[in-house]
Length: 182
Image 1 (cartoon, rainbow, N blue to C red):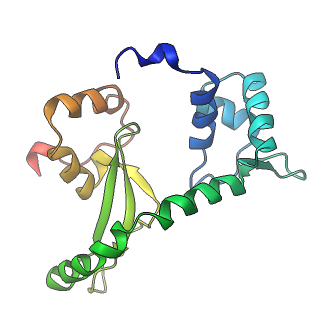
Image 2 (cartoon, rainbow, N blue to C red):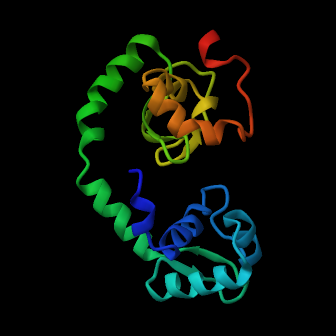
Image 3 (cartoon, rainbow, N blue to C red):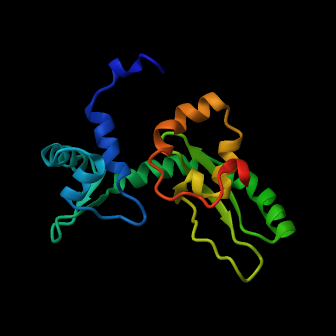
């Protein structure tokens, strides 16, 4: 992908960065919160929000002035889910693994841009303890989860460093043990 930066439109990554600011923990954000999270000026964020709102990717709560994801985001997610039968195909294997080990099992992928695990499926364990806070569609820093460490362990060193080197030095919560000691 080297050399492709000259073909990028600057506003698109900025608009996508705004959309990425919304999480299950932060479903609504104000203008200044978005500007801080996206590291953009408030005037730039305002213009981007107006464009995204016009296309229904963002909606503003007129009473609070806060923004949330719009119906166009839901429409796009429905397209992905409708054509991705991986969850259906893997569910019997997850059930078998869960039944054998009696622990919570996950199907997850690694978002290499954000170095986060994205949970695609979850089956709770059969034991009455250890309820996990993970949920389908949720994200966690890859270095903080067992499934994330497993995904990182199978990445080639070049790909792993290229995708993680700029992120890991800003890790927000270290794991008790590094990957090589678990």
